[in-house]
Amino acid sequence: MYNEKYNIEVITVGEDITVYGLNLQSSGLPINFDSLGVMWDKYTEDMKNNTPKRADKEIEYAVCLNKVPDYIVGVEITEIHEAEAGFMSFTIPAGKYVKVEFNGENHQDMVDTKLMARQKKAKKWAKNEKIKLNNEFTVEVYPKQTVELEHPEMYCLLPIL
Image (cartoon, rainbow, N blue to C red; front, side, top):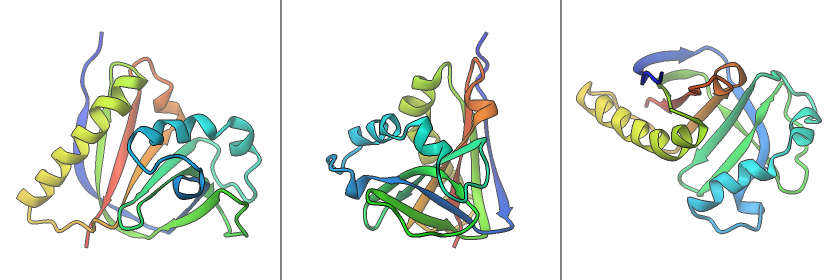
């Protein structure tokens, strides 16, 4: 039976996290919302497993760059290296973030319905708490252990100014 989970809190990310993966700007796909899921389809297990200097094999990230605009799907690396064509790295800086944890009835529900709704709800929560957000980027975090549950779970990080 599905029980909806939803939690918002302020956390501190203690160290920079460098994400390396495919990026939308160089993918040849239209720069729109519909292309985001296609990016994940293009990001194969072989690409993930063969990423040089990969740090953690159990978490995948998506970074939404709002000013460019761009969308990077990837994994954490321990050291920045020269990017292959179609790939890009982005460093999530250490600091304070609003962390939004949630789940879905299934993966599709989680990413198509809950993801955007939860981020909007978190932005409203932050405003009510008088927390100023940095709107330059947002981070989607997909821990393998929770994404593969019957009712998958993930979280987002919204940087605080």
